Image 1 (cartoon, rainbow, N blue to C red):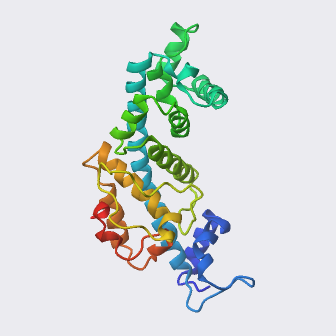
Image 2 (cartoon, helix red, strand yellow):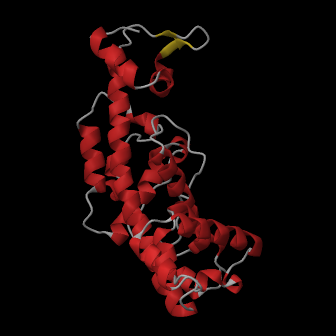
Image 3 (cartoon, rainbow, N blue to C red):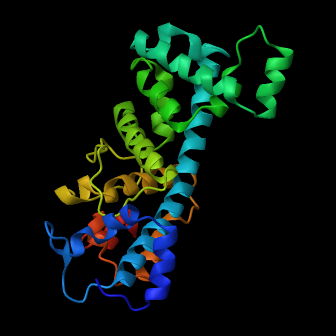
Length: 279
């Protein structure tokens, strides 16, 4: 590997570990056994990829925040109106009773550890009373919210109402999308790499009677296994819950300002910009 500025490179390597960088230069190798690099491979190109990925993750965290808050609000509203203040404790509302028990234990731990003022106030004034849904669900992680939603009985009209307000006609589609977004959220929360990563969780891409703007043609297999598809689900849902968001514009601007970055490594292929969702 070549270095345009060895002093600067040393600074990076003192503050960012070798194995964190390794994922960004893996495809730059000529020999994967000897770990030799292709001719004219510069460390500075690795830094560009690293910074591009970091900025993309920051943009996506903004999108995830909007989706998470909207989901939480809709679950609290619809299910509290339909099934009372502590609906989350009612096992009759959930398909898998054992999973429900596990989810209750998990959310109770989150409640016990919470330092939010309104949670402390509840513990002080109502220590013998279960917290209302609008309190306990407010401190639930997105992963917990996703699990509660997926385990709701499929026949519940509230489950369909929540999906529709998030822009989807089927609750199974929303569950699939939420699981994938939670997966990406956890990657971002741990400052891990999205760059050139195959997604373990893949959301459904064939949507039934779309409410919003989606893809007009089938995606290529590589677009489905790379971050592109999950990022697209975030854009779609942000369009529904915060129509004036700038997430898409920020991603397009980031890509336009980094024309030397091979974005196909993230699944952004060919005419992706011409797709209605990304226009």
